[in-house]
Amino acid sequence: MLASPILWLVNVVHLAITVYIWIIIIRALISWVNPDPFNPIVRFLYRATEPVLRPIRRKLPTFQIGLDLSPLLVILGLEIVDRFVLPSIAAALLY
Image (cartoon, rainbow, N blue to C red; front, side):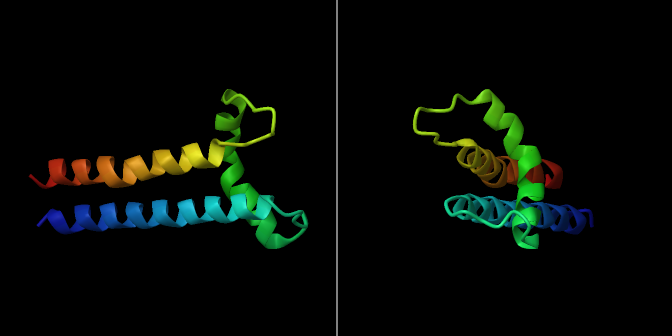
């Protein structure tokens, strides 16, 4: 009886993680060109990702070429949560 809400919640979190990963990917791709900072889509992408990327960017060293690895690290962390932590939590709660 309790399995359905737990599985529903795990699926919702999985979907949210997947959407957020795509938002980060799109933001990283857009940063390669010179986007219009007043474009509503660009503003949304920056507002949605900057609170997560900024603290990681501050702790990472910037390389001589200006390579920003913070999106890669956030995506890696989200994938670990999505592939390992969520199924473990769901299994622990279901059994």
